[in-house]
Image (cartoon, rainbow, N blue to C red):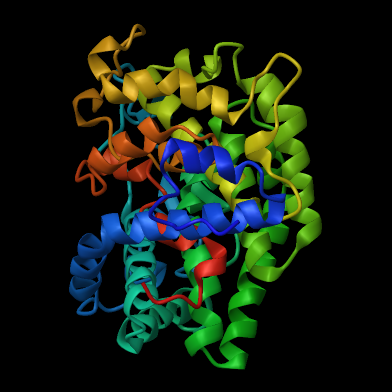
Amino acid sequence: MEVSRRAFCTGATAAALLELPPARLWAQHNAAGYDLVASTDRQRIMTAARNYLALKPATVTSFPSDRSPGGPHDFFSEADYFWPNPADPNGPYINRDGQSNPNNFNGHRKAMIALSLQVPALTAAWLLTRDRRYAEHAASHLRAWFVTPDTRMNTNLEYSQGVHGVTTGRNFGIIDTLHLVEVARAASHIAPAVMSSADQQALRAWFRDYLHWLKTSEKGIAEKKTLNNHAVCWALQAAEFARLIDDQQTRQEVAEQYKTVFMPDQLGKDGSFPKELARTKPYSYSIFNFDVAAMLCQSLRDSSENLYEFKLADGRGICKAGEFLYPYLKDKSSWPYKKDVEHFDSLPVRSPGLLFTGLECNQQQYIALWKTMNPDPSDAEIIRNYPVRQPLLWFPSQQRKKA
């Protein structure tokens, strides 16, 4: 049975798709999803990409800090929610959960976020047009960050989210490289098309070394074992970096972590994330963890298992999480829990989790809402927790397609 992509999002056709073999059903989902995003985002993608053509690569080496305990190639950041102690102004900083300190060093994080905005947009523009200018400029960023000796970043996060007077780096800082997830996805499209064999090898070697650090270092192991969104962010990074270097064992390990740890330990019976609801930013972190968990399912979707279909015996799964959040994404005023201590008015923005669960859980209202939401937030705090901006890149079989 052949199904037109335009007809995919009708209820009758979606039901008919369920009769297809799994591999063919995924191909139909994939093609329809690509076309949906291409038609929705084409103008926004092209506008951004044209602007980004004028911007030169700038890596961590462009933003030195005299507060960094590392060298010029080491990523450095300071923990967001730590402030001087009024009782001891020159002593160790203290925690104020949910309240970001604007005086902390963010130069490297801002540079990485810029990378995560520019490379995916340039890559999406190339997918839509096949204009090599976009691909070549995206590749220049990849070379600067991961290949060129003078500018490349070191393959660890030993000095991320340090706390003044307490520690030079924490495992929680690994969440900073969540912004490399979509860069790695973009690289899987761009590198084979426009980068030399030597540069491709160096690029993959960087992500191989960094993934090894994530899996074996003291900080990486500790982050994997955290009990909230940090572990899910670790898993999404591991899954995407492993995808780029074709490390199927790591991807299988992450899938098991999702099924045996994340769903039973983090997802409530009603589809909420109780550990996120207990935070001072319950709305923001609930959406964030839902988005990252859904993107993990999407990252692993082109492997042997469909995690969108996975459910615990009591019905808990990513589709249940979508059911819980959808009403509050549609109408924030109905949120029955505490308001976030900061940035509540800047939410919600366009949720990638809403798009992908809408497609995979057959919830057309999710997709309709997704189309209406803001895809380009300007609030720096929201951007920090918004790692996926170009869902066009997340439909792997469309790499050779011109929209």
